[in-house]
Length: 468
Image (cartoon, rainbow, N blue to C red; front, side):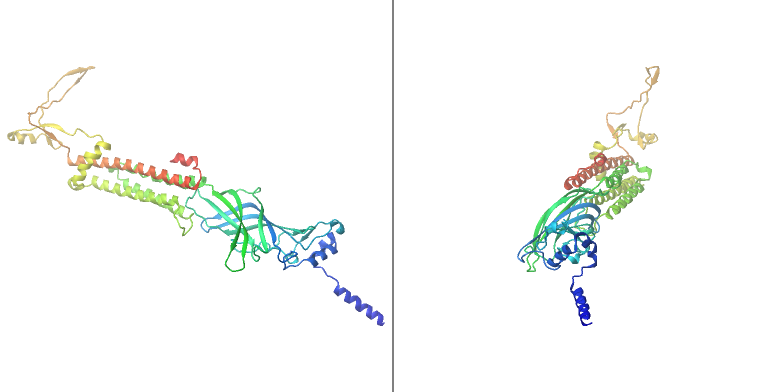
């Protein structure tokens, strides 16, 4: 009986001392054997770097593959991407002979707590969580000690965006990966592969290229330098939509202002026409401002163009009001200053004014005795003394009459009335405004389009150049 009790006690003690694997290793142990898993866990540590000497540097290699650019929010300065990240490093404390373990060369781990893993973090990620925080796929340990971890990640990160050249803007957004705890003497990173072979297209943005560089930074905390890999994504906005829906309508609305000077003064619709154009361009400016970053350092060139065109429309509207006030004034003598009228008629009218009637008509200087009789022959407010003679001339069977004026040697010339001068001056101002506004608007549009396309390095779309 005594021996039986001792035997039971020894058996219970041996069962407690025997290594009990973690429950999640059941399937792995069935594949590679209990001995291999026990040996790996015995030689590994979750908190210490897997190096044979504490002075040795552990090198972590990074792979990066961009799957999709989900969104680039210029207003919020946030970029959302889906990417694949792979990490390689060597565990110097683990190696085995595959022939001793049924030819097994690889063990898959599904728990982060089983082995040491580098704390590589995504620096400018919004949540700032390490890449290895949650394992969506097992990481692999090979018989040579090489460890490989890969994971597909969808993440949002901050990126300073400059929309000065909207909608032809290009941006370079950087993703920074590196160890958070270990300095360059303990753990260093390097980029070994960078691809976008499986990139899915985005309807708004076009990914131009990817690049990477290795950096070492000292944060001034006395710990040392920390290494990181910076992946840069260069993207360009697809501008066709904005050209067709914003730029071309804005340019067309601006050019409609020019036609305000073609409408006759007596039509009565010049002012309402100009106000309608002003309101339309204001709506366009509000639409573009919704797409721009709030509180940016610079105003987008397109916004500057729309603002300038609004000022231009206001100036044209004020000019139109001034012309109408001159034309509709019931007192022609007070409608415009004499010097201004003289300048318009003598300087501008010969250049771009309407074709004037004869500047003067021959009239006779009569004696005072017959002045009263002459006043009764009033034609358009002017007294003339004419003697009509019938001069029959046959041309193609028709008879024409010529009117001759008989005058003394002392001749005077009849001038236009004040009302006629006002009408001609208003028509001249309309034509002058048409020429100046068309020239200014054409130069303004051309300059802004060259700034948008050439400064940003983009080629202007064909339909935009046709619109100019």
